[in-house]
Image (cartoon, rainbow, N blue to C red):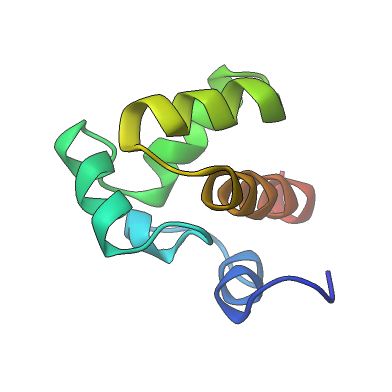
Length: 90
């Protein structure tokens, strides 16, 4: 995990609780607002979608691009953040 961002490391370091969607790596204010307007207002709601898509990188990245207009790096960062969190806590 040495090549991950501080935001990623902070997210993976503790339980999810009620963290806002913008706490996810790869999700800034603009993508956060787009996700919130589609009903994905908390990180755990995005985690739910991640799990529904069976932790598939391709499916999750396509979904994030469709719903929020994320680019490849943003969707990849978010995927890896959630995958690492699941490895730690599930």
